[in-house]
Image 1 (cartoon, rainbow, N blue to C red):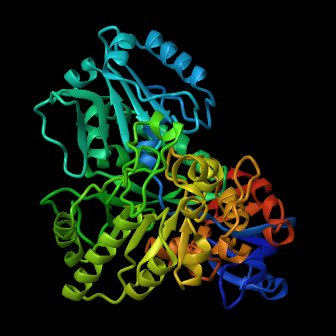
Image 2 (spheres, rainbow, N blue to C red; image 1 turned 45 degrees about the vertical axis):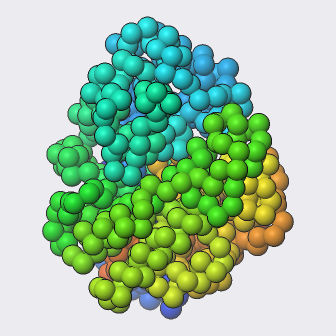
Length: 539
């Protein structure tokens, strides 16, 4: 981080996200904290004679954006040179993917790793078989992570290197796909399998984490993000994170430890500090719509797209846990005081989690638990209302609408179930506080586009499906600032521009209230500050 004056006065248009004073003309920052917010004359009188003055001009100052559902330590590793990027946002065609696979194997004859396979957006891709990857690798490991992060494809050499064979037990909440003869097919579902197969390359990347994380957090700063959660945290990564911190972090990190059978949290409830701390525990109730393993009350369509990715006709998907297993997981963590966050896309998976949490709250009442449901693609208005009653909040991946909108309707679920996907309007109408996110590598970190998509419900090709209203700009801004901070139990120190909070700021090229909803995504991030220090751009 570049240095700054011990005292800085920002003058101009300031959107505070503080309901008691939504707008201000001046903010005074001293030693990283906001000391005064208000009218220019009043705040100038509180400043020292040598205060550094930053005039915003036509630009606008807001609280720094918050990525409430990220994976920074894993994303930093995945974006390293050890893993080739084949995501649909990088490579659009099946031909391009196959070319990248051949090039990657040629460049890494000792073993090649790839991230981003998506047969629904990269039209023409079909799931790679074990035999195909054996041929591609020529005796060396080949591992391909699906863009969703919920499936891993691998060859015989990769399985052997990872110590996986047909007799290996399924990780809890995950499973190895096997054929009729009980042999591995080269496909594993869910994070347990992903980490088991890709462990060696992820461990290697952790050695480079200080630089990798600096690079990744800088990319978040460039889009205005000053705080990010880590929703797949493992305490095994602590030494690497400590080293990265010693080298300098340019964003706050909130950790969510991955649940494990029979385990308890690896750190005390009171841990860390304002820069890095663990606030919760993460579980995956079901998987990804793009690979067919979300638990639904309605079937997937029978289309060329669903057939190409191996979803059986009439499939209602699946969950990763039984209700009994989910009850066991929550008992391991919630009574100790931890916040729980649970990935759930399918409506039946959401019902199961809400059922488990309702029973849990009867056993262990807690007033301010901020239980979180993540993604909630098919969550209905009735379920949002039930969540409100239970005190549950939701975090939503709005970019699903932008990148996969047509896929959801035309290929997977039809208009009835695909068009309302990630229905932020219904969540807000039910009285929930929501956040928007981009989920690590799944979509680019783009909080401004999240807002545009939430307001317009428009896909990348410009299509808007009827039946779901958008949110307001104020609601969208709250979802990327103060309400996201609240979900992370950090609203006392960040998320709004108020005296006593940290000076985590983003400066935009214009006030989002003054441009059309579809143009919010195109606003420029002029500068980003963490605790009053410039971490991106400049004025």
